[in-house]
Every structure is written in structure tokens, then in C-alpha cells.
Length: 279
Image (tube, rainbow, N blue to C red; front, side, top):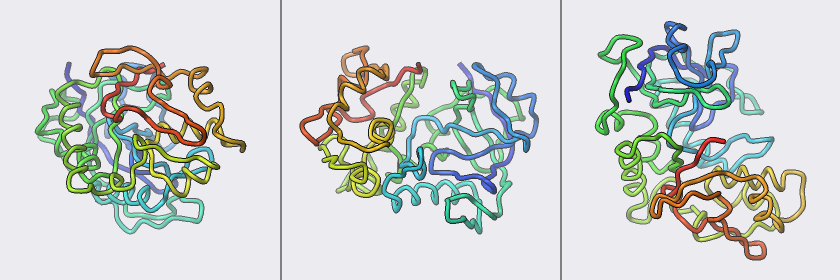
């Protein structure tokens, strides 16, 4: 199934971007209408919030909380640099107050997700094809995307959803494997997702431990108002995230692969071994 090529510009002024989200303005708004799923959510400036496919970078702001900021901001810097957005200035709350944005680029997308964001592969510069063209995305072209480059630099966790083509998934997974080599770079030398991490308080995952952002968000959902990690496994079971384990084709929920022993939490498989199913 082909992707739709949508040309436009990237924007950060007035927003709080992170390493896997940025605003995009299509040259032709009519192109949004061809995507499957709910209508694209456009603000008064005609900007859509993208969900960058297949990767998840450390959170800079989630329900008032963040993950270790040095690596989270490094992922954001890579995104800005790749898109050619320069002279970015932030206020104390992380909102961009000025920047040389509006840089040219394009996305390849097939659909929106439940929050009405286009799920997209993101590219800087121009494309040879016409705006609105249907494009079959090959693995070599994927290598030019911000998605792939973030994974290759070790600044994004692989996070796959249903409908992501196996050949493209393999390409991202290979980038992750390269980033892990030789002690790893980016997040990987500090990643505690599978080895396990102690959660004595919420600050354990906001300031100290580097973990899969999806797992971080679930911990914030559970502990955001205080308390201990006790009961987290039951919380996950009561608020299921449907997944498929690729190795065995096992349809289940995320809590199946989360182990909680006292204050220690761990994911029992690598993130790239799971495919999430949208609720």
C-alpha cells in the first residue's frame, strides 16, 4: 500500500516540540483529506501535530513531568538540526519563543491516529515527486528520514504499531542494533528498560533512569500524584495496552512483559520485539 507524499514546512515557534513531534503545514490542505482515519487536527495557523512513525524519544514534558533532560534535549536537537531549524530560543517552560523555522520538507503518511495526528515519516528538503503523489516507501529511502536517523544515533527507542510494514520495521531495527554496538551511543549506555530499574519515587524515572518512554508514561499515569510503585502491574492489567510479541505471534497486553519485584521494574523483552495495537 502506498504512502501519500505531502509537501510543506516545519514549525516550532509557539510550540513545545520534543524529539519525536513537530508541527507541519501542508502546502495544499486538500492533501490531508486523503489520509485514512479521523480528520487531521489543524490549528488556527493551519499546522498539524505529527506523530513520527516507529520511534519514541525521551519525554521533555508529559503531564508536567520529563525524563532525563540531557538525552531528551539531545533528541530534540537532532530533530531541529535535521530539519534545518536554526537559532531556536526557548522560554523557561520549554516553549519556543523564536526560531528560523518554516523550513521546507515533506512527509510520507497513510493515516491519522486516534488523536488526529498524521502518522508520518519525516524528510527535510524537497521530493522529486509531485505534491500529493502516491509513493511506495523503500528501505533505502527510509534511511533518509528523521525517523531512521534518530534511531541510528541512539536517540530513539523503536516503538512499532500495527500496520507498520515488516521491511521498514527491519530497517529501523537494524539502526537500533547499530546504535547499541560497542557499548552503545545516545540512550543505550544508560538504558535500564530490560535490565530493570528501582522506582523509589517518581523522580527515579524523571531524573535518573533512562527507560522506554511508553513505560515511563504508564508509570507517570500511575504515580503522578505520589505514592509507591506497588500495584503498578495491576494498574497495567486494568488499563491494557494490546500488543503482539513478534517472536511467537502472541497477542496479549503490555503487562504480560512487565515484571515488578518490590520497587524494581523491568520489561522482559526488547522494545523492538513488540508491536502495539491502537485501542
